[in-house]
Image 1 (cartoon, rainbow, N blue to C red):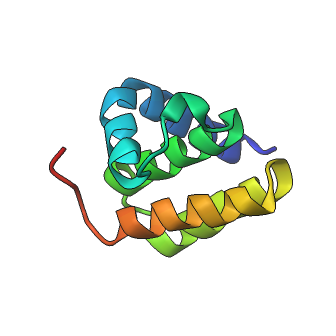
Image 2: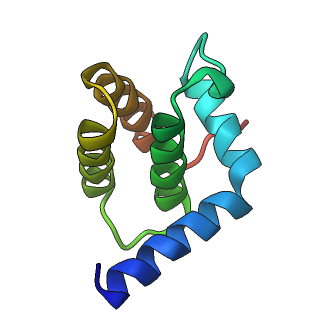
Length: 100
């Protein structure tokens, strides 16, 4: 991984952690009948990173954020997870910011 990619991913991780309560509230709002603690670790962290990027990193188009999140899920999770993540992110991307 190059220095630019490493710095970008570190910034996403730090940003998601610093806004985790807000991001988790948005995930809970979108993921009806799913508690965050019951989601697979990979799935919930992919969601957290992507939603952070939606809210605070406006350089990347939302469709690209979704596609990148799905690629990570395809590689490290399950087929069902990609459908779940896509549904959550697609719904979230339709709004700039929800009132939680």
